[in-house]
Length: 173
Image (tube, rainbow, N blue to C red; front, side):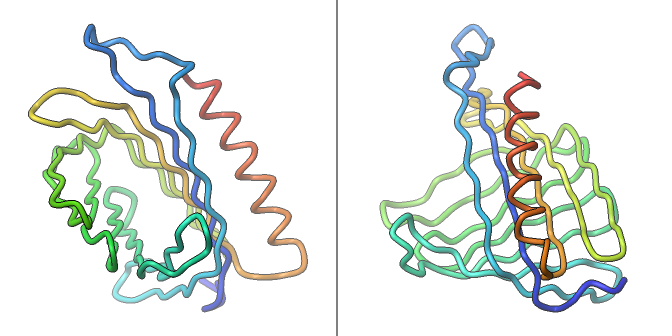
Protein backbone atom coordinates (compact mmCIF):
# COMPACT_ATOMS: atom_id res chain seq x y z
CA UNK A 1 0.00 0.00 0.00
CA UNK A 2 1.54 3.28 -1.12
CA UNK A 3 -1.35 5.60 -0.31
CA UNK A 4 -0.25 8.90 1.25
CA UNK A 5 -1.33 10.00 4.72
CA UNK A 6 -3.09 13.09 3.35
CA UNK A 7 -5.84 11.97 0.97
CA UNK A 8 -9.02 13.10 -0.73
CA UNK A 9 -12.16 11.35 0.47
CA UNK A 10 -15.37 11.27 -1.54
CA UNK A 11 -18.58 9.88 -0.09
CA UNK A 12 -21.81 9.49 -2.05
CA UNK A 13 -24.94 8.26 -0.33
CA UNK A 14 -28.40 7.47 -1.64
CA UNK A 15 -31.52 6.64 0.34
CA UNK A 16 -34.81 5.30 -0.99
CA UNK A 17 -37.65 5.74 1.48
CA UNK A 18 -39.94 2.74 1.98
CA UNK A 19 -43.69 3.15 1.55
CA UNK A 20 -46.22 1.50 3.88
CA UNK A 21 -46.68 -1.30 1.33
CA UNK A 22 -42.90 -1.98 1.27
CA UNK A 23 -42.39 -0.39 -2.16
CA UNK A 24 -39.93 2.39 -2.92
CA UNK A 25 -40.68 5.65 -4.69
CA UNK A 26 -37.85 6.55 -7.08
CA UNK A 27 -38.82 10.22 -7.11
CA UNK A 28 -38.34 10.40 -3.32
CA UNK A 29 -34.71 9.20 -3.42
CA UNK A 30 -32.36 11.45 -1.46
CA UNK A 31 -28.70 11.87 -2.44
CA UNK A 32 -25.86 13.22 -0.30
CA UNK A 33 -22.35 13.96 -1.53
CA UNK A 34 -19.20 15.00 0.26
CA UNK A 35 -15.63 15.64 -0.88
CA UNK A 36 -13.05 16.46 1.79
CA UNK A 37 -9.44 16.13 2.83
CA UNK A 38 -8.77 13.31 5.25
CA UNK A 39 -5.94 11.52 7.01
CA UNK A 40 -5.32 7.90 6.05
CA UNK A 41 -3.78 5.23 8.27
CA UNK A 42 -3.22 1.50 7.74
CA UNK A 43 -2.78 -0.33 11.03
CA UNK A 44 -3.20 -3.99 12.02
CA UNK A 45 -4.72 -4.85 8.64
CA UNK A 46 -7.36 -2.10 8.86
CA UNK A 47 -7.80 1.05 6.76
CA UNK A 48 -8.70 4.25 8.66
CA UNK A 49 -9.92 7.59 7.28
CA UNK A 50 -10.23 10.52 9.73
CA UNK A 51 -11.86 13.77 8.62
CA UNK A 52 -13.65 16.87 9.91
CA UNK A 53 -17.43 17.02 9.59
CA UNK A 54 -18.84 20.40 8.61
CA UNK A 55 -22.32 21.85 8.46
CA UNK A 56 -23.86 23.09 5.22
CA UNK A 57 -22.45 26.54 6.06
CA UNK A 58 -18.92 25.14 6.45
CA UNK A 59 -18.78 25.33 10.26
CA UNK A 60 -16.87 22.42 11.85
CA UNK A 61 -19.28 20.24 13.83
CA UNK A 62 -17.10 17.26 14.72
CA UNK A 63 -14.68 14.56 13.64
CA UNK A 64 -15.55 11.37 11.83
CA UNK A 65 -13.67 8.14 11.29
CA UNK A 66 -14.23 5.33 8.80
CA UNK A 67 -12.62 1.96 9.49
CA UNK A 68 -12.55 -0.80 6.87
CA UNK A 69 -11.67 -4.30 8.02
CA UNK A 70 -11.09 -6.75 5.17
CA UNK A 71 -13.97 -6.96 2.70
CA UNK A 72 -16.79 -7.66 5.18
CA UNK A 73 -16.80 -4.90 7.83
CA UNK A 74 -17.05 -1.09 7.61
CA UNK A 75 -17.56 1.23 10.59
CA UNK A 76 -18.45 4.92 10.42
CA UNK A 77 -18.02 6.76 13.73
CA UNK A 78 -18.98 10.38 14.41
CA UNK A 79 -18.02 12.64 17.31
CA UNK A 80 -19.25 16.18 17.92
CA UNK A 81 -22.77 17.62 17.81
CA UNK A 82 -24.04 14.31 16.44
CA UNK A 83 -22.33 11.35 18.09
CA UNK A 84 -22.75 7.74 17.17
CA UNK A 85 -21.65 5.07 14.82
CA UNK A 86 -22.80 2.76 12.10
CA UNK A 87 -21.44 -0.77 12.05
CA UNK A 88 -21.82 -2.66 8.78
CA UNK A 89 -21.05 -6.36 8.55
CA UNK A 90 -22.14 -8.25 5.46
CA UNK A 91 -25.42 -10.15 5.98
CA UNK A 92 -25.80 -8.95 9.60
CA UNK A 93 -28.29 -6.74 11.45
CA UNK A 94 -26.98 -4.29 14.04
CA UNK A 95 -28.61 -1.74 16.32
CA UNK A 96 -27.22 1.75 16.73
CA UNK A 97 -27.89 4.96 18.60
CA UNK A 98 -27.09 8.53 17.55
CA UNK A 99 -26.89 11.33 20.10
CA UNK A 100 -28.29 14.52 18.57
CA UNK A 101 -28.93 17.98 20.06
CA UNK A 102 -32.62 16.94 20.11
CA UNK A 103 -32.19 13.58 21.86
CA UNK A 104 -31.32 9.99 21.01
CA UNK A 105 -32.19 8.28 17.75
CA UNK A 106 -32.24 4.46 17.80
CA UNK A 107 -32.43 2.40 14.61
CA UNK A 108 -31.43 -0.91 13.08
CA UNK A 109 -29.14 -1.49 10.11
CA UNK A 110 -29.37 -4.64 7.97
CA UNK A 111 -26.26 -4.82 5.77
CA UNK A 112 -27.15 -6.49 2.48
CA UNK A 113 -23.80 -6.04 0.73
CA UNK A 114 -20.26 -4.71 1.06
CA UNK A 115 -17.73 -4.47 -1.77
CA UNK A 116 -14.18 -3.23 -1.10
CA UNK A 117 -11.51 -2.70 -3.77
CA UNK A 118 -8.04 -1.76 -2.48
CA UNK A 119 -5.58 -0.49 -5.08
CA UNK A 120 -2.09 0.95 -4.79
CA UNK A 121 -3.17 4.58 -4.33
CA UNK A 122 -6.94 4.39 -3.87
CA UNK A 123 -9.64 2.49 -2.01
CA UNK A 124 -13.22 2.06 -3.19
CA UNK A 125 -15.98 0.72 -0.95
CA UNK A 126 -19.72 0.28 -1.47
CA UNK A 127 -22.12 -0.51 1.37
CA UNK A 128 -25.76 -1.48 0.74
CA UNK A 129 -28.11 -1.59 3.71
CA UNK A 130 -31.67 -1.20 4.97
CA UNK A 131 -32.51 1.14 7.84
CA UNK A 132 -35.22 0.00 10.27
CA UNK A 133 -37.08 1.72 13.08
CA UNK A 134 -39.21 -0.28 15.49
CA UNK A 135 -38.53 -3.38 13.34
CA UNK A 136 -40.10 -1.73 10.28
CA UNK A 137 -38.08 -0.99 7.13
CA UNK A 138 -37.66 2.76 6.67
CA UNK A 139 -35.23 3.08 3.75
CA UNK A 140 -32.89 1.18 1.49
CA UNK A 141 -29.52 2.90 1.35
CA UNK A 142 -26.23 2.76 -0.50
CA UNK A 143 -22.99 4.52 0.43
CA UNK A 144 -19.98 4.67 -1.87
CA UNK A 145 -16.60 5.69 -0.49
CA UNK A 146 -13.65 6.69 -2.67
CA UNK A 147 -10.30 7.54 -1.08
CA UNK A 148 -7.24 8.45 -3.12
CA UNK A 149 -3.82 10.00 -2.69
CA UNK A 150 -3.74 13.70 -3.40
CA UNK A 151 -2.24 14.61 -6.74
CA UNK A 152 -2.69 16.77 -9.79
CA UNK A 153 -5.61 14.78 -11.19
CA UNK A 154 -7.07 13.31 -8.02
CA UNK A 155 -9.58 16.08 -7.27
CA UNK A 156 -11.02 15.92 -10.77
CA UNK A 157 -10.99 12.13 -10.68
CA UNK A 158 -12.94 12.07 -7.41
CA UNK A 159 -15.50 14.60 -8.70
CA UNK A 160 -16.01 12.57 -11.87
CA UNK A 161 -16.28 9.33 -9.93
CA UNK A 162 -18.80 10.82 -7.53
CA UNK A 163 -20.93 12.05 -10.44
CA UNK A 164 -20.80 8.59 -12.02
CA UNK A 165 -21.64 6.95 -8.68
CA UNK A 166 -24.59 9.28 -8.22
CA UNK A 167 -25.88 8.42 -11.70
CA UNK A 168 -25.32 4.69 -11.04
CA UNK A 169 -27.26 4.91 -7.79
CA UNK A 170 -30.18 6.65 -9.51
CA UNK A 171 -30.21 4.04 -12.30
CA UNK A 172 -29.99 1.16 -9.81
CA UNK A 173 -33.38 1.89 -8.36
